[in-house]
Structures are given as C-alpha cells and as structure tokens.
Image 1: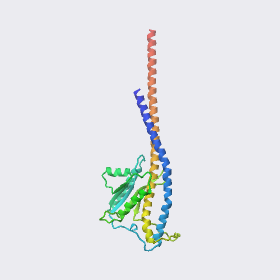
Image 2: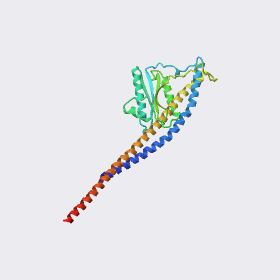
Image 3: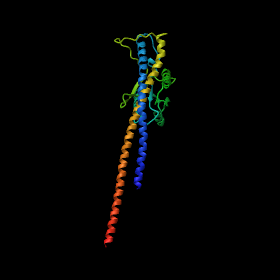
Length: 297
C-alpha cells in the first residue's frame, strides 16, 4: 500500500510539472508571433538606411568616417555576446556561448586580445561564475528588446571603437547572436559590426536619387551611428525570436516527457495494485480452502 501511495504522489507531482511546462509552451508560442512581427517591422528601416549609406559612400567622393576605417588598435577585438535573461530554452544559450568561445580562441590564435561584452543574464552569469573578465554587460530586456537599449549598447561600442589603444579602445567589434530562420531552425551567427562594411551600389543598379543637406559628410556623420544601432537592434530582435522558439520547443519536449512519465508511473501503480489484489484473492481462497478442509475433518 505504501508503494501505491508513493506512485500516486509521483503522478501528482509530474502532472503539476506538466501543467507548468504546458503553460510556458503556450506563452512562448504566443510570443513567437509578436517577435516575428517585430523582426519584420524593423526590416524596412534597416534596408532603407543601408541603401542610403551605400549610395552616399559610392557616389560622393571624399566622404569618410572613423567607423569605416581600420583602427590602429589592432590587438584588441571586442566580442558582443547576445544571450537571454531567462532559461527553459534548451541549448539556446549554450550554443551562443560555445560559438563565442570558439571565436575568442580564434582571435587569441591570431594574436589578438578578446574583450567580451555580454548581453543577457545567462551569459553574464556564465562568465562571472568562471571569473572571466567582462568589459561591459547589459540585461533585463532580451525577451522584449527596445531601441533605447540598442542605442545604449551602440553608443558604448562606438565609443570604445573610437578610443585609442592607451584609452582601452578596440580595433574591431564582432557580434555573436542567434538568427531566427523558422520556428524549427535557429542558427548562431558571428558577424563583424565594426569597421563597417557597406555594400557599394553597382553600376547595373539605378542609384537612388538622394540629395543630402547640408552636405553628404554631415549626413554620413549622422546616419552611421544610427546604422550601428539599427543593426544591433535587429540582432536583438532576431535573438529574442530565436529564444522564444527554442523555449517553445524545450517546453513542448518537457511536457511530452512528463506525460510519458505519468503513463509509466500509472502502469507501475496498476501493476502493484493488481499484484496486491491477486495476493488478497489468493489469501482469501487459501483461507477458504483451509476452512473447508478443517470442516471436512
């Protein structure tokens, strides 16, 4: 009887866990749609500002900006690592950190000094637990990124990129983030953010009819920081959508496993109860036979 009680308690506990994971799965499913919409909404602006900058750089001789130039601080490379603030997302953060660590090793092999910048509580905790240096960290917005956060990050990275070696500047900036492909596929990407690489407008394309006031150089000085911030914002949105998709899959898998475990425990409980009933019947039959034998004597 004690074994039956234990199994019943296990079944109740697993069912309670399944309710939680199911609720988390449904929440993640609803947020995936919003995250996808946010990614789609940010794309037109990113495309237009990229087109404007490409046209400006291609068709205006003499314009230049420090963000487009290789910096003399070549031995220090910033690595911006985008993780999540929350868990329950399978291998989402593990994959990002693994790729970031591979990049850091590659930079060291090239004779560079990696300088980590980390977004997300999970990544921050991972590096601090291992007593690893973090140049700067941000958290509290990875589930629902806002442009103000991207602006803060972009300003800090731009400032460090423009600093000299003596001031602790960096010569290049890489970003490790997760790109949302589909609900079933998310891929970790490594991209160089600075120095900026703008695709020039080729001769077979019709150049946009842009007139820059007061000058092309003034427009470049204004647009480039916005371009950096918009790219960071887009990567934050991609990572947020990928996180929700990973969480949805992880919670669905946890719910399915919990339901299977309930079935296993239920079968075990039924087998125990059946064995108990069989034993009781055997004892009753044995007692009846014994009484019959004693009565016959």
